[in-house]
Amino acid sequence: MKPETYRITNASGVYRDAAGEKAMDIALFYIIACIFMGVSAFLSGLQWSEANGVFDYLKLVLLRKPFIPVVTVLIFILSGVMTQVGKHAFSLSYYEISIIWLATSWIAIAVLWIVNGIKPSTAELVGIVFCHAGLAVSTIARMAERV
Image 1 (cartoon, one colour):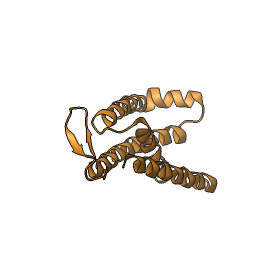
Image 2 (cartoon, helix red, strand yellow):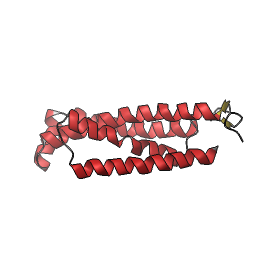
Image 3 (cartoon, rainbow, N blue to C red):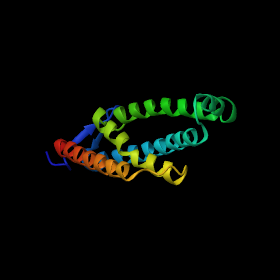
C-alpha cells in the first residue's frame, strides 16, 4: 500500500494515517527519551565526578545528595511507563522503541562532556559515530519495511 493510504489503529481503536503520524510519534518519543537520557547522564556525571570509591559514593547518595537515588528510581519507573505508552498509544514496536532509546546516547556524551566536564576520547567519539550510523541503517530499513 502507499503510505498515504496505509492506516493503523492505536490502542483505543482510532484509525490514523500511518505515514505522517508515525514519523511524528517517533519524533515525540525520541524527544522525551532525550530528556530522560539527559537527566540520567547528569546524575551519572555527578556520581562519577563527586565520588571516588564505594564509601564516597554511599556518602554522596545517602547524605550529601539523596535526590540521586530517588530521581534514578523515578526515571526507571517512568521509562517503563513511557515504553508502554510507545507500545500502545504510538503503536511502536519493541525494536523501534529500543532503537530510539539507543539513539539518545549522544545526549549522554554531550551532557557528560559539557555539563560535567568528562571528556570522551577520540576512540569513544568514533565509536558513537559508528553506533549511530548502524542505528540509522536499522531505522531506515525498519521504516521501509512498513511502507
